[in-house]
Length: 89
Image (cartoon, rainbow, N blue to C red; front, side, top):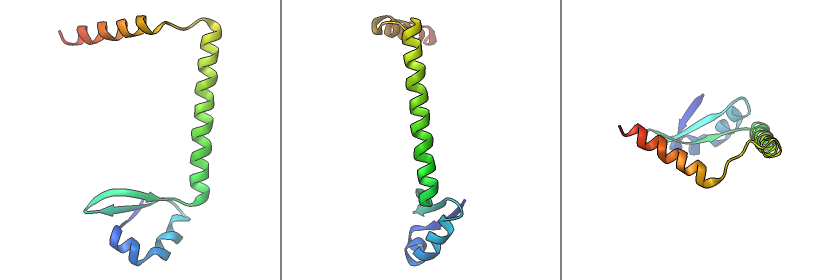
């Protein structure tokens, strides 16, 4: 991924915009990554992927409910506490 400092990105914004059409462009400030510029098409694709994954997880949860593969909250918390207690040994 091509990266620019924040100062260079500001000075060469048009160039950064053009590069973002071909792939993500990183923006660094004080030597650390702070942002990534994406094309509008890439951003829309990521949003579609997130929506599709969320829908898949919702569908899986509904299927689990219908199949009876669920547990109550108290039982789940007790199991987590038991795992934490065992891990401390």
